[in-house]
Image (cartoon, rainbow, N blue to C red; front, top):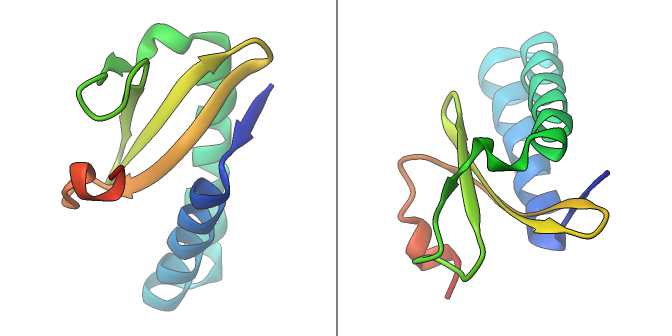
Length: 95
């Protein structure tokens, strides 16, 4: 099982809206569905992401296309903290 933080939910919604406006509904649906499948894959294989504890302790990062998914292992699976565009300065979004 995976859970998204409130900020990750906002990130996910923003990604959908941006993709929809720029590329249309079909691409927005496809991209976010791929991301949801990736969440399930990370849940089953949490070590796929690289350690990124310099951003936040016990945090891992997995890059998917243009976005970086930041998450932590949890008793129930993984907790997704943020989903940021790879061009963003992630340190600014964790302070």
